[in-house]
Length: 226
Image (cartoon, rainbow, N blue to C red; front, side, top):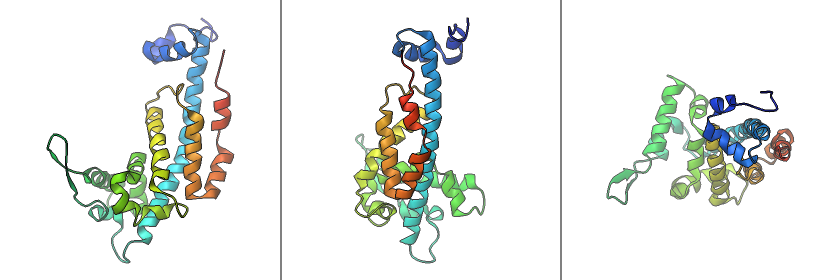
């Protein structure tokens, strides 16, 4: 088989079910299906590129907002996880008592360990995942985090939901990307708009930079077709 007529090695590489997703979209045209797979890998990399810019900006903006509104001389919040995430009990539907803030505290403790003894706050922050930052804007954190700290990371008047909705959608897409899943049915134009919206709320200059350097619009328009 030539490269234009990909043989069964493709199924051995991708698995029949995974390649089947591309085949179904391509109307059983194996060459088009493989082109779609390659396009998917390329646009995945482009999305990761842009999301990395947003993630770094978001974590630095949140850190700046928290530190600026913390009592002078207090330990950095990464070394005092209980200050931002105190033990908060709630009762689950099955009656089990759950500490709602255990997960973020554990993530911070893990980041401290990974950063190593005596690591500066910046290194600890870099160890925290995108998922950690994504969940800081959920409703449960509205009063303890959003009102005193996090709203100050964005342009004045930005509501928590204005941040939480697009970052939630981006987080879902990021999880698909992380597992190398097909993006064929994803609304990539809207997700790119979400990304630009959030970068703009942090910094209009950053939005302009991301927009000028992104490959997403070009790649979206270049999706292979019959």
